[in-house]
Structure formats: structure tokens, C-alpha cells
Length: 160
Image (cartoon, rainbow, N blue to C red):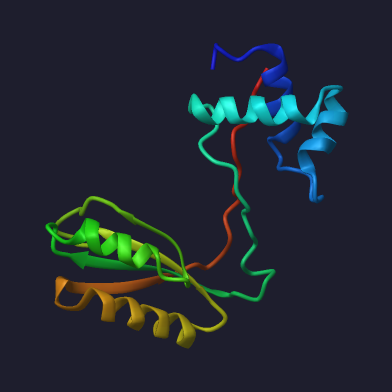
């Protein structure tokens, strides 16, 4: 982070708790910092390109939206098929994120994870059944790990 100048640091400090909930958030930030919106956007883009910022996105509170059956579906998939099948699962409209992780044998055989958000456990199970149909015989075992609470989600924090 040593390549950040004072303006970048001020920009991160102004956005680290989230972007303003307005149609033109970069203009609000620009006004707060006394700079142009174009410079704010250019600096944010540059920080993304260098990896200082990995992504900018919405982090919804699923519980507040009525989705209380949030489940991480976990799958034991044949290693030679997990990448291709993971791509397909990640494209399903009800999967918010999907990724491959190493197994931790003998206790944890799962190598593919896919998060589903549903209004009931029955709905989440139906989504898991739809994933299972895509995976077919490549899936040897599966489970759903339901969230019991929402953990605090935060991004980059600068400490001076």
C-alpha cells in the first residue's frame, strides 16, 4: 500500500464504509473531497487495475430482503470435472457465488461450494436439487450448511 498517495488514501477513507446510496455516488464523494468525479473514477479504476481494490459491488443484507434460508451448498465433485461444472453452477441465476476449495480429508470431502439464498429451507433444498441435476454423476456427496447469523462484512480499512 506504500504506492498510495495522500489523495488515494483520502479516497479510500471516504469510501471504506461503503459508497453513498445515491444514483451518482462518485459525484458525492468528489464533492466531499474537493475533486472532480472524473478524477475519483479514474483513481478508483487505477486502484482496481493495480489490485489495491479487488472489486466494487453491492453487499446486500439477505435477511432484510426476506431471504432467511441462506445456505452454502457443498459438493464432492470429481477433480477432473470440478472446474467445468463449477463454471456452470456459478451461472445459475439463484447462485450468488461459487468457488472451488481444497478438500480436508478424511473429515471434509467437499471441493465445490455454491451459495444459495432462499426464503425457506424447502426453497433452498429445491435450488440444491437443481444444482445436483446439473452435476449429475460427477457428484459423490453433498450437504447444505445454513447460516445462523449474518457476519459483519467489511472491505479495506486504512489505519493511520
